[in-house]
Length: 518
Image (cartoon, rainbow, N blue to C red; front, top):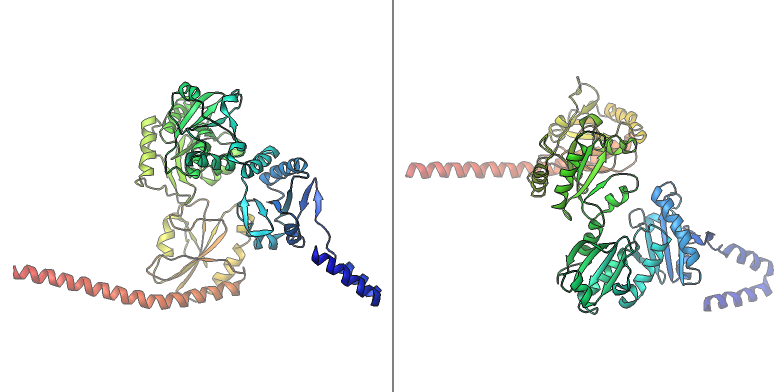
């Protein structure tokens, strides 16, 4: 306000002396307020800081307009904006496809896509769970600001009509257990929560105090005993997993739920729902799932469903191969095949347990070795030749990992041919490519494709990502720089290897000497 008054006084003074110039300066310095669409501010790099200073609670959705989630959350935002008029909470959105620089500045190119900025501080935004609808947004805002007593309903007054209800049976509401329960409720705004101290209800459900029950229309789904070490994250994982069926069928509605589940180990059953043995195999898969809740998420994929084509392509599964079971961890994306043609419960359980213990062998898939694969300027690698070629201590290998159906990947083929010709006289350099969709890569090389990765001429298995400009001169410059680094490191490697050999030789001589003395 003081700044506004000072500006007004200064403008008046200048108006006396230079009225025309002052008017022009005032017009040029005036900022347009952010445009609104259905009550939601349309934020840009030019107006974001101003909006941040003006609104003490600014809930912002960073979205890509063509994404399904982006459109759904946009609709939820518009619905919530109407309800939040005059509440002190302002909603805004940023189109990250247009505001790339702003998104980069705010580190909004990665999750979470919804953030609450408080009191103008853009460095300490509060992550908001991705909402299903407008009610989710309103519930989240209410729960995060309300007191524990206000957040949740009293279960003794509930009619049990909710499809899913999470109930905390506590001895005391002012306890660490209850605090963890309340914190989980804030992060799960799409789930109904309730508490009770009613001893009769505790007796009815035959439980002790400090237990969380998942109820579906008053039917007990599962119970969770709170412990002193129970964290909010553990309770959220329990609720999230048990609100799903033991086996979830993959489709457009469940895909987001499956991928966002806190359990990263997934068992996938690829099967035809029309097959004669479907019920028998699905029943065995379902029975095995009961033993691994919170450890492995069990998912059924109908290979006859055309909309599942991309998933089959990703896991390289052909319809004719069904039924089959794969295990995969969403962190490293290494896949494991059920090593049996039996699909009974015991076999599936043994497979899952072996996988969890780290004893399962990963599935390796490779195309056949192409004829003359190493005679062309760009060497065509496959799964069985990859490691042998790229981890050659006497060669520096630059590899293009591509997807054949990706236009972005195919666009790099001419560049890779140019690079191969530019270095064709250098015997210590290999330019290669590999189809990442048809060959398993048992290396730390996972990520988005296309990818350019360089393997220096070292004994150590080292991989260097290239993220620079896609031009031959820049690729060669990067290649030369990494080769020089590798040469310097190779000197140390050779010295270490020499010392190791000498040490082993000395130990062997000492062993022989000891034997002679004996």
